[in-house]
Image 1 (cartoon, rainbow, N blue to C red):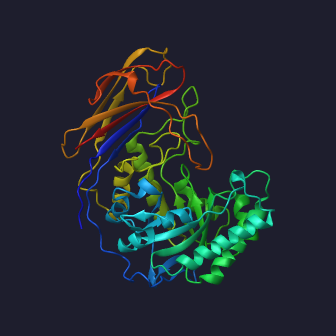
Image 2 (tube, rainbow, N blue to C red):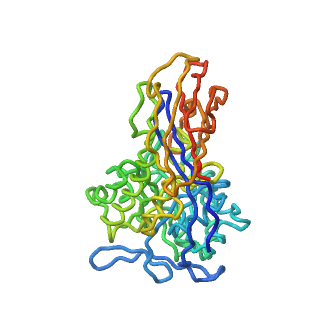
Image 3 (spheres, one colour):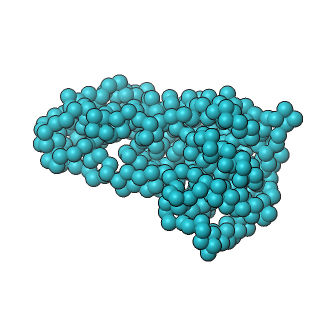
Amino acid sequence: MSFPAKSPLLRMVACISIASSLSACAAGASTPDSELNSPVGKGSRVEVQESPQGRFRLLHNGEPYQVRGAGTGSGVALGGGNLELLAASGGNSIRTWGLRQLEQLVDGKPLLDRAHELGITVAAGFWVRHVRHGFDYSDATQVEAQREELRTAVLKYKDHPALLLWSLGNEMEAFEPNVEGRVIWQELNHLAGIIKALDPHHPVMTVIAGVKPATLQDIQDYYPNIDILGVNSYGGAPLVGRNLVAQGWNRPYLLTEFGVTGTWEARLTPWGAPIEADPSSKAAETYTAYTMDRDDNVGRSLGSYVFFWGHKQEATATWFGMFLPTGEKLPRVDAMAYAWTGEWPENRAPKLNSLDSPVAFNKVRPGAASYAEVDCADREGDPLRYLWDIRAESSDRRVGGDPEAAPPSFPEAIQKGQGTPRIEFTAPRRAGAYRVFVTAFDG
């Protein structure tokens, strides 16, 4: 099956300080043969197999299965053919975070059904409540309600053929005030026991943030029911496998979030704004993290889920997301298609040659006049069109990936050149930090 190419898109992010961070999208590929043959209604059988040499692999319906996956969102983040594009790009699995995602419709069908049609498995997320969101682990009523919610979910989804594993909780140990880690791990162990009693055919995974010795020790001590350790890591993603070995973890793992250096790891402007990398660097970083984890950890890594196969506002609208809100794909999608298949998409993203402005990384007076210009080239020789946007620096910064509001836009600041590679603009009248974005489409 083939599907029409979307407009490849190039997006630059710049602080005023105009920092360069360019993204691009290009669609157009062929859907690979489905890797799942069981009909809807026949449940899958998945297990972690250990060899006498202590090496691990995942078996899906009796066949070795290496996860080539992506974390996905709800609503528009899965619209516009994004799930179909994952399959066409060589991906074979998605990771969700909560039950609401399993209930959504994709292309008019329930997510699990549509995923199965495309040969995509699902690491089904169950969102274990966080203390920072108001959950109290000492409240028996809250604890039992969460357990009952899990029982209901397992009974509802355990026989779906798209189900790969249960992803029980995400970064439960991080950002949690006034609660001992062992309390969380003991409850997770109880929840995993509920799953195993109701569904012996799918392994249980829990996801942690990075590789921390104390966390791994707590899991070893209090969470024996875990089958697979999930690790979210960004700047340190290429070394996750090595670090787990160094800390004595001798069980299988999945790299459950990886891609680009996080906002908390990035270089800062003089006024403290994180500097987003340019799109070529982001694509290369994502590709490197994937291939190093895959090639350096055979027998320990069961695969990975790139973050984030959708749109997400976190510091900026393009930092982690691999798609725009309107569904166009960005250059890291091209990089993962190459990583998964060994071939580039037919229609690739435009290439950034340069991005210039005299106010880049500088302070200017409110209302000061300046310009910004970008030089891009399209590999297929298509003409480019441009869309510029000036936005305030995000003031709604959260932790742990919690939802953030998009900062306001100032279209009136652009005086001349909208639609072209060069604009003239005036700095907004209100003092503060701003970024300039440009999107270049090749069709």
